[in-house]
Image 1 (tube, helix red, strand yellow):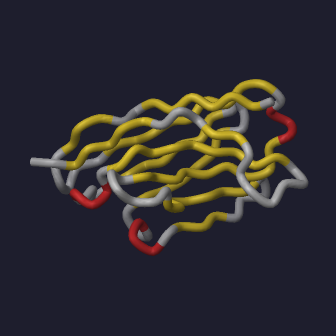
Image 2: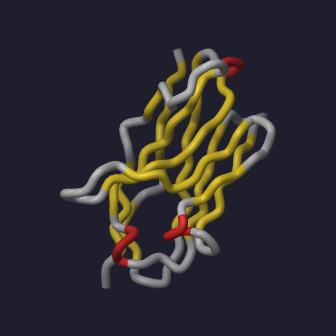
Image 3: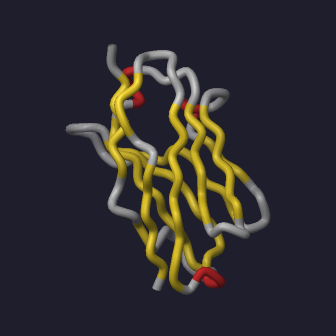
Length: 118
């Protein structure tokens, strides 16, 4: 079992930056890919970015060029650097992990709120 704990959310003005962190614990060796999803009020959860153990990265179109996902395997931590934030980035951001052999992300954090507002 893998436990994920997000941190770093908060209130930021449009154009500002935030860095989210996700600390993983438990059976870390099982993890293949990790990622970030977000859910805005009244909307479905959507993909933000993912990164595999081999370093392959995928970004959703709305965040390309503004967000950067990275992974520090020595610290068992996933990051999401968010720049040029927009009000439409306001959402609860969730960290997730996928074990080897799984097709879907099977471990999820509790989420951290990001609010972009002036």
